[in-house]
Amino acid sequence: METIIREQQIRQRVAELAREIHSDYTSSGNKLPPVFICILNGSFHFFSDLMKHFTTDCEIDFIRLKSYEGQDNSAGIKRIKDIELDLTNKRVYIVDDICDTGTTILEALFMANSKNAECARVVTLLQRKDGVKLADFCGFEIGEEWVVGYGLDDNGLKRNLMDIYNIK
Image (tube, rainbow, N blue to C red; front, top):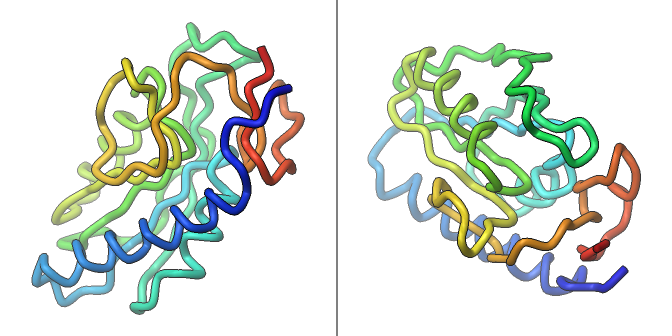
């Protein structure tokens, strides 16, 4: 495995992202608390660290969407856990680990918008340089590497690693 993003770089960028999102929320003029939605399982480390740096009152929720079996994402999106909060007229930030094909994020956006969110914005830790661009806030751009660590997995393993690695 080759380290491509170190834990310290991740920590620094997550703190910057929290400040960027805070600025976005305050400039929106929306007086309702923002809602942060974590897409499980991959984004749990990122989401937790992001929330530690967000300084305004907010609501959080979790959804679980499954699109991969191993490295195969051809079976479509499976909803395992839905949004539970009322999103009516609220600014929503959907937090995911990576924007790859975009299908998981598009499903999450559909879910938020169907619950009458005022605005749904996308926050991702990683985005492919030549991939679909859906993130309003992105931590890092990567190439076509298969990455693990900091919540990203290889068949359920390696999520616990604090750096991000290329395993191919």
